[in-house]
Length: 294
Image (tube, rainbow, N blue to C red; front, side, top):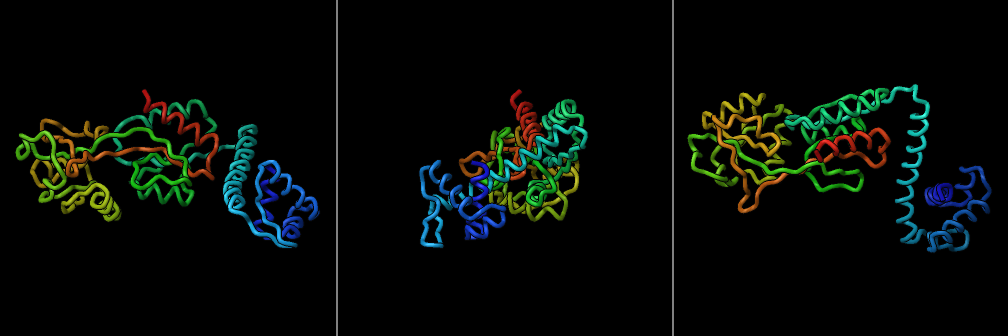
């Protein structure tokens, strides 16, 4: 079926059996017969023939889109298998890592992966979500480990690794009697972002539009500076169940954060393009998932 799919894609792309046959160095009758056999194997009509012309049926449109992805994956599978078999060529795996995630699973997965695959050179780029997403879309990283900020896309393999609740780090002196807090109750206090100034706009949009933060924002360059402002009651920081250990509980309070009655929640994924999926990418994703399951 592999070759039949390729013939069918060529026929649809060229909208001509004759042109597709020339491209594939076979006769028109042979490529027509291959497409008919494909339809027989599937038990559906992919093309509605009208004399020397044809239209693509709804089933054919669906099969065409899916077949394109499958053919790409088969080509990549073949190339990857041949590369691994040769063994002598250096493979470079580009990974994106969410800055300030705060725990060791990524590094532990990297250590185990490098031990098992010493022939693979790993290059790591750390950044905020949007920065990493742009790198992935432009094929400058192969796999990202990052937080979820948009609906999951069918263009990517999305592997859920962990999820946790958001918390607000606030001054102990002002919020000593609180057990939880809402975004509305923090509206008069600046929300402190530890980001590069160039990334501040994207982070502010996420905090405001997705998390429902009503506060003004204050941008600082270090986490130490942010904590100092919190202690002085000049703002608050958002952390989660995995990054709260960075906070000294004797100097600040860490309160569960709500938007109205809804607790704010975050999910973290390993994700990579389906048309750039390969053995080493999936092997690293497996290692990373194992670390979060421990």
